[in-house]
Length: 58
Image (cartoon, rainbow, N blue to C red):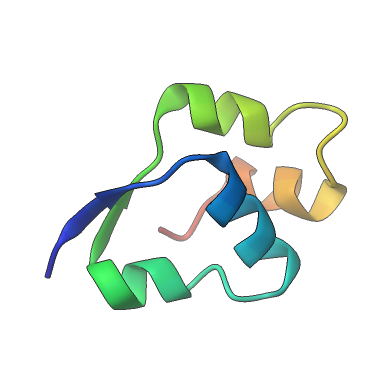
């Protein structure tokens, strides 16, 4: 399996549509840079996304 580094947009929208598990299923290991995690944790980010990034399963 490949390793992939993700930016904010794919993670945000996959979480919002309930499909966040697609990236690890397709690529194996998914790395989320600290700057991306910070963006996903921003107070203006939807609650569902902030909750997900607080304890990401990938």
